Structure formats: structure tokens, C-alpha cells
Length: 180
Image (cartoon, rainbow, N blue to C red; front, side, top):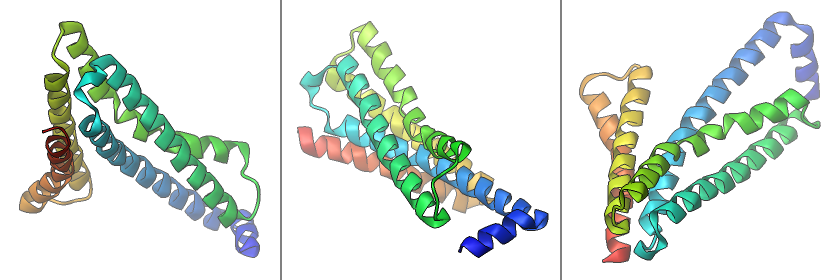
């Protein structure tokens, strides 16, 4: 393992390939993190009791995603360190932390929805339902965009977007099952 790393460092072509592969892995993690962040956001919204309040729920949502980001980043950090067989360099540590930020960013739209609803005086139960609906819509859009970027077209793209949206609908079902 160490020999391959040295050879890649010495051979400019191999080094360029390694950089491209890392960049691809980073893009992969960032996209997956965003989708995963929306699913987690939906689960937090679904599990929240109505008496929790919209602002408190928004804070809990951000806090939950920060904990997931820290746990996921730590897992990637130690996995990369074990694969490298050495301590991570400064830029590698920063990349690991930054690559997971889309997981936290995914909750920003639902949090803004919750805060606007709180300002408008929307009842918590309705506010959460609306935020869940927005979250489902975001999942459909993410599924649609990722499918299109992956070259999927036509019915298969619609199916991919619908499948991603079903993850959000599962959270709506969870909400209805927990609180009714």
C-alpha cells in the first residue's frame, strides 16, 4: 500500500489519476450527503411532537444534522487515515470536513420554512406538515437532478425522481403513524 502511494507521488500521470479519483470520490460524497441530509431532516420533522414548537424544532433539526455531520466526518477521517496508513495532512482534514457539509446544508430550506411559519404564527402541527411537504419536494428535485446528471432520461428519470421522493413520503407516513 505504501509502495503504491510512493509510486503515484513519483509518477505525474499516476498522481493526476489519483487526484481525479479523489475529486470524483469527493463529489460522490457531497451529493450523497445532501440527499442523506434531506432524509434525516424528514425523519426529525416526522418524529417531532407537536408541542415542540417550530423554532425549537428548527434548532433541533440543525443540531441533529451537525451531529450526523460530525459522526460521518469522523468515520471518513479514520477510514481515510487507515487507508493512507498515516496521519492526514492539513488539506486532507479540511477536505474531509468540507465534503460532508452538504449533509447539514440540506436542512436549511426546511429550517427557513419552519422559521417563516413561526413568524407567521402557523400552528406547529400544520407547520411541520408543510415543512415535510417541502422536504419531499426537495427530495424529488434532488432525485430528478441527480438522475439527469447521470444521463438518465425519460421514464427512468421520472422513476428515479419518484423513488427519491418516496423516501420523503416514508417520513410523512412515519409522522402520521407516530402522531395519530
